[in-house]
Picture 1 (spheres, rainbow, N blue to C red):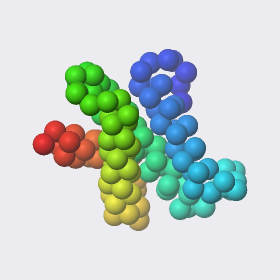
Picture 2: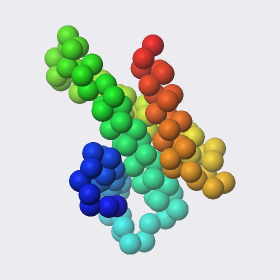
Picture 3: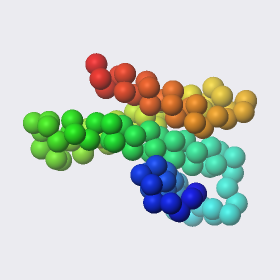
Picture 4: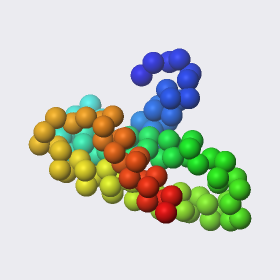
Length: 120
């Protein structure tokens, strides 16, 4: 990943770091130099889900500030959203893994779905 410091680069770095943390939470003994195909798919899915959530936060940041909820409630709701987005990414990935994976297309589709669901 480029080290330019742009908001996009920082967001992607954070998404990838969070994805690796999630992988280690799932299996603390994981050897990152010898990942199975499923573990690689999990890291891709976590990274895309985290990046989608980062994008939603970027789009909805001012809305969060205007909400009449306590920060803990907002964080709990964001965690629910993150779980939902990850489930959505996993569902889409299961359908397309036999074919060529298009991470940008996948991220865009999930982000559009997520924004549509949470805008209602």
